[in-house]
Every structure is written in C-alpha cells, then in structure tokens.
Length: 271
Image (cartoon, rainbow, N blue to C red; front, side, top):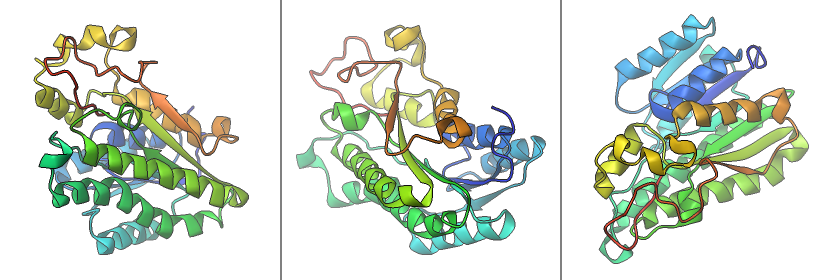
C-alpha cells in the first residue's frame, strides 16, 4: 500500500504506543505526513516521530490531555501549522476501566472514559472536519472495541464510552458523505498492547501464553492487524466505504472473552 497517501496529512491520537503507534507508522509508510498526540511518555512519542521521519515523512508529537478542550484546540492548531490541515483523523487514544459492577462505580469513573474515549473525539471532529471539506477527500476513523458488542458485566464505563463513539461515527458519516468525507469504525478484540496487558492482569490471566490458544487462528491480535484495516479504509481501495464498523477479532463469537475457563460466571471484555 506504499505511497497511496502522498500529499495527505494525518492526525492520530495516542500515537506514541500500541495501536496508535502502529497506525501512525503505517500511514507514514503509505505516504502521509503524521502528527500524533500523547499524554504520558515523551520518549515513546519521540520514537514514533523518529520512525515516521525515517520513512521520509514529516511528523510531530504534541502532548495533550484529551479531557481539556484547550489542549484539543492546541493539538489541532499545532498539526495544521507544522504539517497542514489534517484530512485523515484517527481517534485512537482511550482509557480502560478497572472492572466493577454499576452499583460500585462512581460518577467520576464513568466520566473519565466518556471524556477521553468519546467527548474528545467529538471535539476533534468539530475542529478538523470543516478543513476536510476543502480537500479532495477526508477520512475519520474511530477505534472502538468488541466490548460494545459483547457488553460484558462489570465494564459499563468503557462500554458506554465506546458505544457513544460509535454513535458519533454513525451520525457524522451521514452528515459528511456529501462532502466526500468517509467516517468509519474499527473495533478490535483483545490486542497485544499495554492496555491488553492491563486487561490480562484484571482478569487474572497468567500472561499471553496462557490465553493464546483460545484466540481465533491460534494467535493474539497484534497492533499491526488493526493498523492494516485503518490503512485500507483511508486508501483508494476504501474510497466507497463509509458508515461501517469493521471488527478485527479474527471472527471471534460475541461471547468470546479471550481467556480459558474463567473463574467468574461473567467477565469484562476489552480491545
């Protein structure tokens, strides 16, 4: 897919690690200049930028707290100033949930995932989409999760936030199709990332080796598996696709939780 995105500018949230990093590097390999946001680790962000630049593309990393509208404004302005107005937006950054019943979950524990996983994406679309209307093509990709399909117990804040993200994508796709802007959702299952590591700890699994055989195709989903779908969607090959949710879970059944013989009767689930 190399060089299919020459002349385009991408903004990828959470591009310092995991799925976001794989997406950012993949888009650069396809010819796009790529700006990324990060929250915690400037060193990892710098590594992502260096790899993008090694591919011959321009890049920058912007620290942003996605809960803060002013940071979102500054993020978009910085990318537009250094690279040009983005015509690809990948809303990837997200936070997980510790796992607890609704009755044991505080308001703030619901608010945090909703702010970062959904409300930030809404604000970014508000800032970025008008500029996309002036370009030959625009693409928005939301990274969701099979959690919205499984809706496992003890996971309401995460499921609620990702369901809101998918609803945003559905509405925006209808609004912007006339402006040549495609809006799609990519919903992975459990992925071998830092967030995936945390989820295995949450459910008490003994590392990836203890669950690998339970995955479809006998292997864990990797960040590049997800990035490849994003790359296809924003390429010429995906030009007639909008308003869709593509699951990247190896065809796993909705009730699959990714762990063998779980001790509780019901388990939370995550990407």
